[in-house]
Length: 180
Ligand SMILES: Cc1cc2nc3c(=O)[nH]c(=O)nc-3n(C[C@H](O)[C@H](O)[C@H](O)COP(=O)(O)O)c2cc1C
Image (spheres, rainbow, N blue to C red):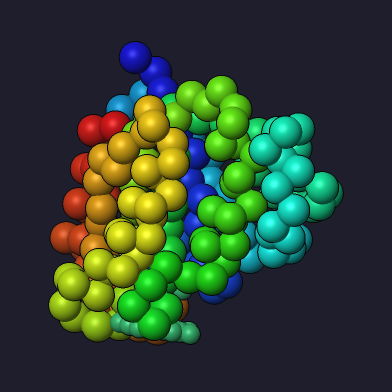
């Protein structure tokens, strides 16, 4: 079955390591015949959640910025892929801000069932991603029909694009994409 695969790249660095993981994943998914799209937060205008909870009743956010369009794409996607740099052993603040702003989806009909996390860190130990995994699992636990289907741990990469020197990791990400 042809799936809609949406990658949300949350690094502020254009061409950063986590974005390259997302590119590899999407390349694999496209090669397997799925429809793919990547949204990068570095060129988006996104404010913090104000905590007003108006969205619980209206399914709409009171803030009118680029999140409106992103949420509509998230709602329709079959597969949602989050790509993030590890910041202080957690997901990036940009990713967390997007998760908070996704609250209008909570009472809504949404299509996504499979959620993936692609993370990059300077630390060479795979446990560097554990905080981000736990954080994303908290979000997923609020979306009953979704599950964390895969986690890609791009470790030992610091400067932007350093992950290009790790073809095995990029190939694993592409393989994950082919298998969505
Ligand atoms: C504010 C900040 C905090 C970071 N914290 C960590 C950390 O806790 N552990 C780690 O291994 N790397 C840390 N890093 C390094 C990034 O995770 C690493 O450079 C990653 O590959 C960046 O991904 P990107 O190119 O997609 O932005 C940090 C980088 C920044 C800018």
